Amino acid sequence: MERAKRALAGLSLVVLAVSLVSPLDRDATAARSRRFAAAVSGEPGYRSERMSFWFDPEYAAFLEDVRRRTPESATVAVLVPRRPDLYTVQAHYRLAPRRVVEERWIGEADAVATYRTETGRGPGGIEIAGGRLWTR
Image 1 (cartoon, rainbow, N blue to C red):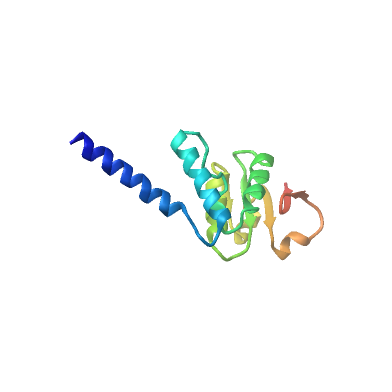
Image 2: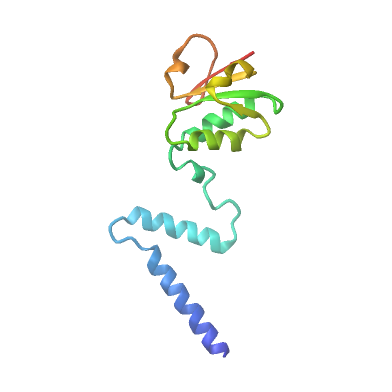
């Protein structure tokens, strides 16, 4: 029985190794291999912090700047591109416990953060990663 378990484990590793290989993209194979080795070693944080920002990796830095510059009790209007709606979802998630509101409730906001929108081209505010921030 022990021999069968070892054989099954070995076969599983071979299948996994084959699944990591991308014959058309050596860089992708190398990246997958590094992530796999880190995961097997138990290295904490082997997954990218920006993995949930696949749609716009630079957006993570913007939200981090907003988070650092606004108090946890603040209401923040986040003006972002309408598509994909992941911009808004990530703002709610990453800025918690701050209250995040849409443009239509901008009058209730203690701070207004704009990212890649025409609204962010106006005067005033401070420049942050990928946008501007106005506070009241």
